[in-house]
Image 1: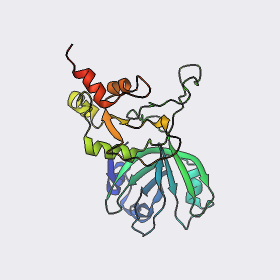
Image 2: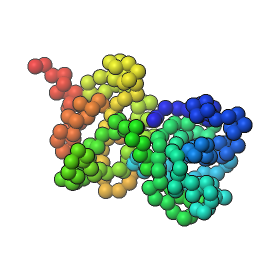
Image 3: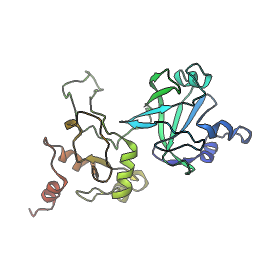
Image 4: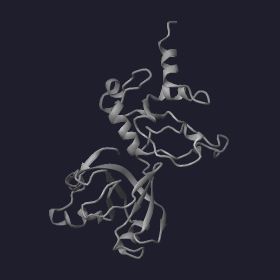
Length: 247
């Protein structure tokens, strides 16, 4: 999850025979060995000249099928009741041959529109979104008894694209303490970091457009927890002062 792959990489990884490559693979989505592969353009015009309002809403992906495929189309029906996995890849520039693997998904909701609109929910149990901390809890008293707790959070901007742009700009070192997971743990820690919202999400009562450079900052989990030790959260500057003060 989060790694970049070209279609050729996917052919190689899934052992797609040469005579079954290209074709539908290049038109947005296809099926191979009962698995569904979706290649979606985000905020950009596809190579066919079409542009759809594909976008992330929190951790979920709003996605539109082809204009020629209705809800009754075989390919759309196979997504609603898949026999295998649904792998979703996205890119922001249709000229780029690489896509970012977003995860294994399932349909959360769909609309019988033209084109069909689907909200994809990422649910692969083997893919843990550890980089995203549930820092704003709306109803901290709500949970299920037992080993699994259900936490309710706002999802206004759990946007993986915004997160990635923040990291591309600031890097993966904590802006409070300077800790870098890759430097400490090697390949295991590569690209791991939390992203802190300067404007706390629980204070927002509507969807807003986040600026990855001005609104987000990379911080390690420890510093992230300390920032949110109080409400409102401490500033990064305040926490750096505490950390660097002379005992």
